[in-house]
Length: 131
Image (cartoon, rainbow, N blue to C red; front, side, top):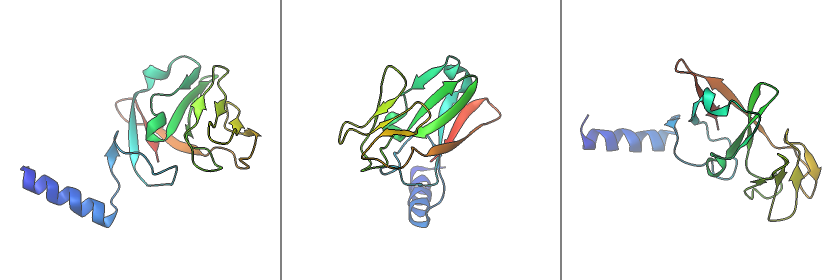
């Protein structure tokens, strides 16, 4: 495929709203955009804890008791980016909302829990997160 063909396909996909697969692009503040992010090998998340690698992409990866989940990294109050705390909770620096390690609101002004994003593993054992 030459450069012109690649650009044509890229523009066409952007105009028609096709789904994309890759590791680029945020989700515009938490909106469901329909793309899939390859978060790398599942083995990268072997230990319990919060993984902030994809915070700027729009999610945190959490492993707890053998289960992997992805939570939105945007506060449900005003879509500010959350920070992961050492106790595995999440804090919104804009207005002070806090969320527990499972994404439930523990202190407002946020009223809604953090969205849990759909995850799966592909044939290469990579974690895929649907935005």
